[in-house]
Length: 452
Image 1 (tube, one colour):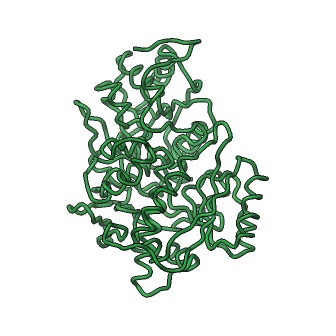
Image 2 (cartoon, helix red, strand yellow; image 1 turned 180 degrees about the horizontal axis):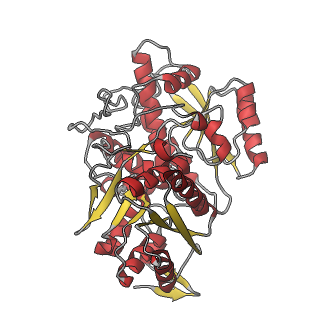
Image 3 (cartoon, rainbow, N blue to C red; image 1 turned 45 degrees about the vertical axis):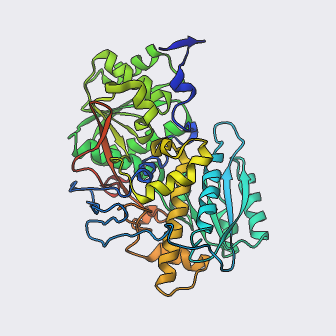
């Protein structure tokens, strides 16, 4: 039951909504990729004009519609890394209200501990030099200067709002990032494993157009910076699609009545679909509000709303909701590795690790596991393991995929997004009884068609 304290909803789910709460600044930024952590592959079938991505039937391989099987090379069969250490500068934003993301660093370091016992990067053990940015250009520049001075081999960006690309480029140090945040990141001299808000929201617009045949869309956003950024991204893609939209905006925290008011206003003009950009307890408020009002207009939202904690709270009030970046959960060797690595960080039993509740820390895990996979494949092909060789291999290879996923790596596929390396996202829908099932025909949606 909801209790009102000073006009703000406080309930069990809000106090402990999943294993991690999404910090407000980056709502939607790369959330779609989180679901790839929860299964061995992201299966797909035909979705016009989205690129089809098909999964293999086995747990540890995946294929694209036109590619070959992707067998991950970061499993328990690899022994401890014994080569020369690879020194990596890790820049992450922490300690600033609203943009505090220690989970990214923690998950990267935990993943690296595992990898160093299982092959490292192409046989080389990994050592990180962390530097904490504070969400200001000055702190990001200080990190760049510090890490260049320490002669790191590679820069790995967790979440850094103002990366000092100029300093890294001058020092000839390659930069690989978890996700782009601001517009300048999309054409920076760097490679980002995921595509951030622009690609996630473009894929959502594709689903609105091609699955729901939408001509009109209602958007529900909160007043924080991350939600506003997501709203701007989806609006731009809807404009490309020629779909009319209307946005309503609420506060970061709303009462039960407040969530109902937002849902009522978004549905007032009877749009074909609604896109909700609330996260955490906002997922619960929106789902309950829609059900209480008897609204049947379908809703697209981010993957965090499919977390076990959210669905446990709302039950079948989630009927009619579609989740970006989510596919059916499949047990697999890769999923077991994820649980083994992240359970100690989360402080839960391995069986309780929920991929949809990992937040941006989960993207850190996936990024490092992907880089290890690429490093091992590169070395197996005869190229010596160096940071610069890995950067080139990532940026030019045509047959790589995200770790344990069918989503292809396509670095530089679009000139306006030259630093982005992945564009494909699965979508799933809630089914009665607490199930989350693949959205048929949209298990692998390409965002490229509607990127502005």
